[in-house]
Length: 360
Ligand SMILES: *Cc1c(COP(=O)(O)O)cnc(C)c1O
Image (cartoon, rainbow, N blue to C red; front, side):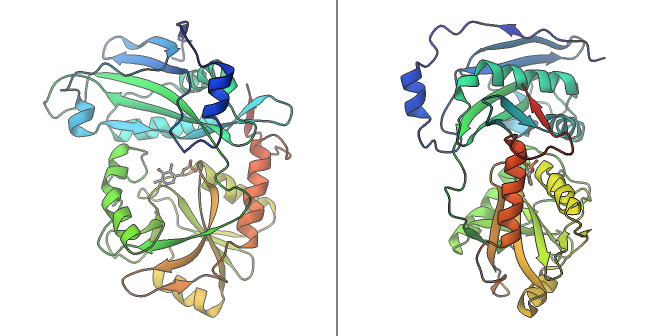
């Protein structure tokens, strides 16, 4: 089926000048800077994927009754392009994002974009917006799929639009490494067995915002979600997976079981840790056990991971049942070193043992 769809190039009448671009790229706020282009590909039942274009970035013309606005039939991806030391631009495991996009589509009863076409679209945008790939930082890419059929009946849409946009982002960490404080919510859940926890869909995020607001009210940076049935087992943050480092150097991370988003960063860190000869336990781990292990010095570090931040140390956990500190409350040595190792691979500086990097 992967018939090569031709992505038509629509010339941009007035792309940003070098000076405008340079000004916008100085210390960009995450997601705030728009590049010149976007990719759009349409889908209709019967016709399949068609009308693939790359052209000037602009508003999408959508009827107000489009299903995405009412029933949240929407999925997305998040990935980054880095400029390597040799000046070439690199993507990191884009096929993993393409495959996850298909898994998300199946769960949301949406058509699956062929893996090749997903990667082709992302590469086309990176090429068109190459000048927007910073030397420090990266170009964040946001592919997404929305249901565009104008009909208020509750059923899968018959029409969709796939879009890829991009924004230059700075280094999440400007030198210093900071540990975040996280709030273990008792009242809110993110996902439940049979639900959409493993799919990267906007609905999961909409449902997490009140919990995030609760975390902020409690002086925390992020929410830690526990399982929805027993309210006991650690799952993940609103948009990042979590790891714990034991005194013996082994790692613990919650297993993928339908309620956790299978992060590309999570998968990559598991591999890099195993390459170092470490044991990685993908096991259920309760908040109470973590508290006991942290207090006994059995667990010495905790960190969250995802494409945007790569790795961020967790210093403290607060919850309605009390607060506790992990290690010395600062980002640990393992988190710092594994972040550097992964970032080096992504930028083409470190040895790419697993063939993860794709130069374009
Ligand atoms: C995207 C996401 C992650 C991280 O996935 P990466 O592929 O590593 O960026 C983790 N949890 C949730 C809920 C996410 O949406």
